Image (cartoon, rainbow, N blue to C red; front, side, top):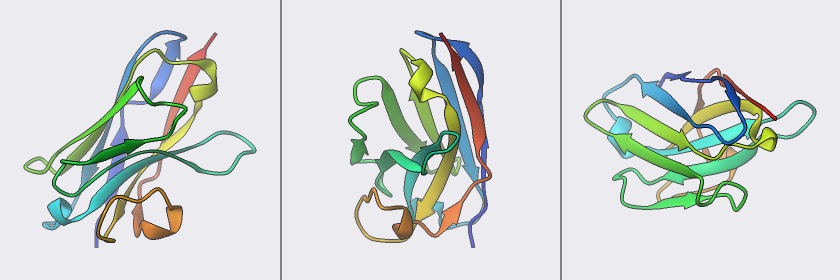
Length: 124
């Protein structure tokens, strides 16, 4: 069982930056693929970024590539999402998720555990 708690959301102006954190409970954090997803009002939850269990592989949605960076610290049981050059269309609730499937994946169904989400609002 893994419990995930996101933090770091807030209100920022377009062009600004925010850093999200996701703290995980449990002793097996380093065995999970970790992903970030987001959901805007009236839209489906969409993939943002993923990092492999070791941290050696990452993958990003085209919409955030070059602006966002995912990282993890397995000693601290934490995954991060650094968001730069934010746009109004990045406004959403951001969720971190843990998946036990081998290899990085963008599919929501491959993730077993989800956090409660943190709101990110970008004003234009």
